[in-house]
Amino acid sequence: MHPFDINAALHAKHAQHVVLIHFPIALFLIGVLFDVIAQRTKNRALAVAAYYNFIAAAFSTVPVLLTGILARTGTSHQVWLGLQRLNALGGRSAREAYEADLSYWLELDGPAAARSMLGSAAPYDYLYSFWSDQYDHKIEYVGHVTTWDDFVIRGSVAEAKLIGFYLVDGVVRAAVGLDRGGDPELDLDGEMAACARLVAARARPAPAVLADDRADLWSLA
Image (cartoon, rainbow, N blue to C red):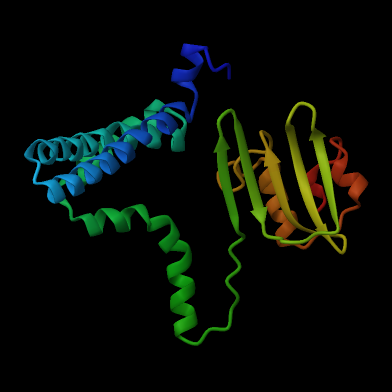
């Protein structure tokens, strides 16, 4: 994205949120500074300035919230759905709204915690994954590894569209997708979903096969 392309800057996925989030932070910090000085010097003008800084900081969090939702979902339609959901939550408590937002994780962690408390020795086998949008690039990751013996690349480094496989003793322990492969938990037919199955199965495909775009990842588990 060119820094002087106004249209691209306004419509880039993260651009608005990254810029706007600094306003409430700066306004709040300046307000604190004015308030401290006003308390020490008994300067009423600075106290008033601090008050209006706090008010401005509070109001500026609204566009920060909306652009944050946009950056998270990637579509204005989802922002609209988010606004509808916030409106629907208007009569509910903050705790209920918080629990609603955590429902996905509660579905995963809650039953596992309950089984453990009841004495179950069954392993918690949810396959770890995360994603990150870095301006024009999207990263997806499944599995977890801190050290590895080999890193195999499928795709193009030059074009920054690839999937990388982390191998430990020949076993696929984790995989990362850069602008390729889709979301492993949402795009169930995608390459990253296939990578998740390879990780879960502790598959041992040959590195040359992993790197070969002609080889079907689903057939390797």
